[in-house]
Length: 281
Length: 301
Image (tube, rainbow over the protein chains, first blue to last red):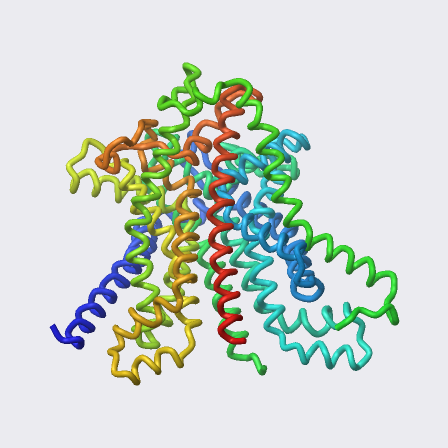
């Protein structure tokens, strides 16, 4: 067998493997859209579930997911961006900084259900928040933090050093330089990371299982100390725990969750490619 | 840039110390997580003799807390996922980085990212309704909810991590390496296989480790599709039988146990085991990257 023939064969195999890897993604999204679309109506999106969730809509689950995602962002974004600023602008290369990096890597690897256990132990039981929005948001924030920190740090580091030097030489203080020069330049990159981090939080089920999620709550939460319904947990409940669940409602819920998460993905991708096209350095 | 004390004021000093505190917070969170897992999980070691924890029967109702079937279940599902994800993930990474024309690259990269963004509960949902029946019919088994079904889906969840890290590593190999190989008369495939991939070896290894790490920790998907039978996987055919993983056990049982009971403590103990496994995997993965950076520095100096 000649070398060229080997190459042709191997390339064909690799191409097939790559196609086999991405085809299921298209199939999954297409299939859920195909079976879920008939369920979508204004009523489905805006009504409370009734008849043991076998009829009605998924309004409280939609609102719950919005609350959880927004609340997570409220905590994780300032904390994560500040940590990224510390790592990119202040930290020296020493043992402490290395420990911080190892800590971030490990936070990123901890299984989501272990975050759920931690949230249960610290927020729900020790701090007595109970199963609540606030416990869920805090748990999801810590889980999202590593994604936000690492992408924001990368975005900050990509800002050329000369920008900082110029600002400092014009008499700007270190913080003025960061706030007025570095951060605005890094904003699109930071935003991309924030959205990708929150996308993950919006789709997660395991961390909210014991910290925030209500099995069935036919009203919206009144305060941050109330439990809440959420789309991922609701999909889990209606596909495994409720007998005789109409299949249409299941696919409809899956579709709403998928659209929610994927639209965040699209927004992040658009911001990233626009920023790349516009960058002048 | 040395910080000077000139033209600094109080607000700036406050902001800077807040930023510093945020930087340190990651260490605090890891410590807090470990502390609360230990706080709720450690009593288990006093309540159940170690020998009973290392037994082969998990039957909490009768106070049988043998962890081995759960550990074995996690291992076999993860092993199955790795066997599928590594070849397909690496092939995809090589295709995207080295072979694909530009337009295919522009489509494939975001698609793989979409796969990474699919909520695990959605994959579990489709796994139950669509994949499990297919597995049941093709393998002719009594149920489609098997370790293998879980492995297939977990492979899908490990692949995005694997592809993006491996593709980065391949992309980072200097063009001069490839040019040199091609100039010596190597074919493109020989260049990829004998030069580019070995040069990116440590990054590729990291990709595999992180992908597998992701698979071990996955919860909702495996809980929904693996059948959740806590049996010891003793032979190879266990891959085609129902299993129960560590993560699924926590997720399925924590809602029903009484706070402070032995069962409750044991579930946190499983959490400690998972924490330690992910700690080890990630530490090893970052050590590989670290080593590679040092070698690169030596080469360049």
